[in-house]
Length: 473
Ligand code: ADP
Ligand code: GLC
Image 1 (tube, rainbow, N blue to C red):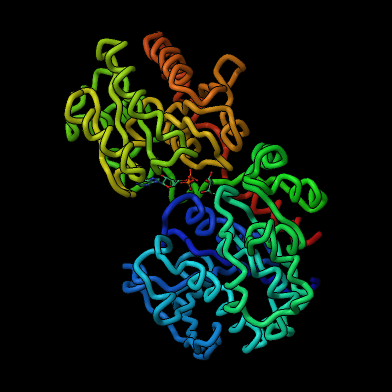
Image 2 (cartoon, rainbow, N blue to C red):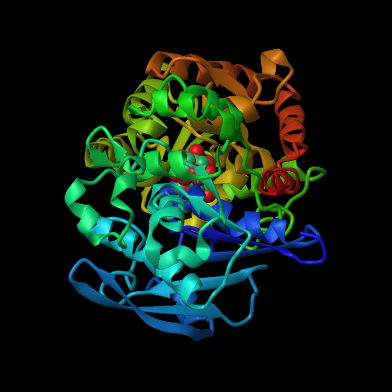
């Protein structure tokens, strides 16, 4: 590597602030930026083109225009490069009319064609332009076929031998598809079919584990859990454990800074947090008809069972009735229709409860700044960023002891500044909320917890360095 920069291409379907559905975007929008602060590293991002405001508000150059074959279809592939590099890294977007020119990353019937097209398009561009990066860093199953394609598709022989690192942000989604889809992959050495297969299907996540030079998960705790529970891939991960690494995510402390965050009503730091968090809370409570003198518990996230969102309706009615209305709850999110409807019903019945359905970046920042406690009853949590954002904004996390949550939040009883519970069950959540209420009512206790949480260091620097060491190895 001497004398030359190490070039890393992060390949992902999401990247903040261009297109965000969840934490994957936050990671891909921050990690390369922090890697570029390390001498000798040149990290870039390649993602699909979306019909998003970021794209319309920034200038791009078309740097590549070509064609690929997907089965019988010939598809135009364009690569656009953002001109300003304002994000702290070079951003490339791959556009394929009809496949990669959509409003959102997910939710389309033909997503197999969409993601195969993306991966094919990226490698076609790199090969055609003879760009040979040192590392291709693939994120989640949408890019899981790349390690295989680089080695075993003839079209990309120029890239053969390029190192591939794969990060599993969420092993719940594996992108399985029937073998008929093999006809839509770039032509490959059919003797190698076993590297794509898992139990009779093409499984991009399994293939990514088999074919990458190293694979990572976004916390050590989650990696350990995958050996026991991984939606059928347990034996594979055990087999491949020699190249498995757990590296915890950081947070972008430039974006998530309560002192400068433009989305907050009142900015604050650890010295004036108690007074100014209170002012943020008063404003938010007023807007949502809640009572600012009561403690505020919040949940932000997707209404999915992995997040434990199915517990929320029961948590709402039981916590409000059992405490005779001694607390406020606020929920921001969307997803499962049954959960949404139940919560709407309780929003109507209970004045201590506020619901905002939808995805609202600004409101999420306001809630992190205003709440006293943040609930994360996740069944599965590979890393979790919400708890780290809440801590940085002086809000005490209440988390189930799993995955990245157990690596980042210690219970107050063991010297930590958060609250943990073990079982994913409503009773355990309510019990922990009662412990939180006791703390809230102890004089001086909240002040200490606010300060302790705000002083945690989740900066990206350490983890960015760990990835670089992994690339070098
Ligand atoms: P996941 O990616 O599994 O959903 P993470 O904790 O890694 O979970 O990241 C979630 C990210 O998405 C955080 O930045 C969080 O603030 C944000 N988020 C989740 N739901 C919403 C919402 N409804 N509105 C705004 N931001 C949200
Ligand atoms: C996934 C995981 C989440 C993690 C995020 C970023 O969405 O569900 O736990 O924080 O990826 O790595």
